[in-house]
Amino acid sequence: MSRYFDRDQAVKRMQKVLDNTGASGFIGAEKVAEWVDIDNGLGLGIDDSMKLLSGLIHMDVLEKDETIDEIVSALMELYNSINTLTPQPDLKKESMMIQISEFKIPPDDWTIHYSRAMGLMKKSKFQESSDEFDKVFEMLLEEPTTRGDLYRIFYNASIAHYLGGRPHLGEMCLSFSLNLNPNYPIARKKIESIEKGEEDDLIKLGVLKRTFTGLEEDRKRLDPKQYSGRPDRDLIRELEGYGVTFSREELVKASRESESRDDVINSLFIDTVADSPDADSVWAIAQVLWDRHCSGEPVAEAIIDSCAEIEEILEEDDRTSFKRIDKYLKDAEKVIYSGKKGVIERWSKYQEYFSSDRHTLMDVFMLYSSRKNDRGRFLKLSDHLYRTLDDPFWRITPIILEEGDIEGQIYEVRREYPEFYLLPAYMHLHYLEKKDLTRAHEAILEAVEIVERNRRSRKRYKWNSGSHLTDMDHVYSILEEFYDSFDIEGKREDILEKGRKVTERLKKKNEQEVDEKLNEIMMENVKKSPLYRYMEFIEELGIDFKTEEDVETTIVNIDPLGRKIRKKKKIGRNDPCPCGSGKKYKKCCLKI
Image (cartoon, rainbow, N blue to C red):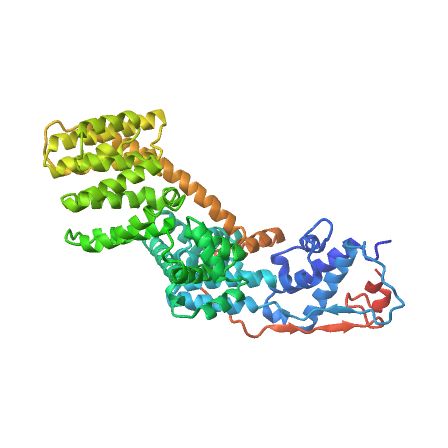
């Protein structure tokens, strides 16, 4: 198949059109040729190329009737001169027609969102403005176009993102704005201001506001109370709308067979909706149905719930509140002594067990150790948990309560669990209660020694969910607080100072690793965003947005009205070809 149009002639014609319309200040004909090249370029169609070029042309020029015809004609000739390997049409089909799409020139649906984003920013609603800019770039991708001052759009988006709690997007937009046009002084000054830290407080405030808003929205969305007043039939109907089939009998049966509420809810409800946006609503409904039909079932999460209630009461610092604590302690004991297989073991695998529940129960044992009727109860509960889990933490209880041979028990725990630093850490509290500062000091130093030995040998106490860093931070905080509170002889300030230095060094290293991982995850998400994809698209186009001199820095809004609409029209076989060759369509582009 021979080439119908001469490529060089088509490029020259395209360049002339660009010169006549003023678009040549941004793009050359050879670059437009890359746009429309299907095999070796971007493969943009005539419509998309027209949308992009029209965004670079001043409206006064674009509104002239001949301008659009000249651009379309030049684009068609260029397109046909490059992309020759197209199927031969059946010329016998009289109904064969080319349909030119209807679209605004240039597309301006994005400007509605842009105008709204700018209005929100003017009202200091930066978070809402930042979110609205997402829609701006989404529309710019959907109906691809651009503007000669695109750098302004990115600059304004950067301000909304910086102050709207998304500084990573703000940095990206601001850098891109200056890359598009290095002669944009407001962007240069803003980068300098941010690098000096002059914007830190405002940026942090934006992050805090967005974080708080997100947490509040999550809380409301996940709160089962929003469904608690509705009958089962309504909840079942809503679940069916999400594609989840509910059976009360199946739920009750599963709850009796499982040691975990989460496992049941996941298998019967959440797995069906997977990563769907409906998952939060399904989860909240499932919680309501569980409370209605399975609330008395012994599961690991019931212990966690009881301990959380106890912790809240303890934080009130009211030692007369044992009656309230006792209610939830009995609830926890009911589950622990239920005999249901795997419940205690499952509880021990939750973060709450490591970080709070054990310590909450131990606080109760220590605070109310003088209650003779409950001492045996505390000892029995601790012994049962130790025999079930083999966690030496529960060996602390008889030592703290001075039950039996104290020194012998301490010796046995040290021998069997040499990496267990929590025993001396708790013993120091026991000695403080007895006003024995010397032994309290010795206990803290023992805890420090164990933690440092663990760090050097890279050993860990099995039931510690933290890290060497969290252990170090814990024991050195205890030592520092002890020294600040009591004036005693034999202070080991050298140990404290050295330990704090090592802790700070490890903290910085850990924070750096966490930041790198978070940035990696963040970038993965950013790359999926319309903003990032539009930036990549603009870079591929090769448009030169740079101005010869510094441009004015007035923030200009964009009026979405007054755009010219390119009407949809059909071209018959005997009509003049829209490429401008002067031939009939059937003897020109239809033939290629």
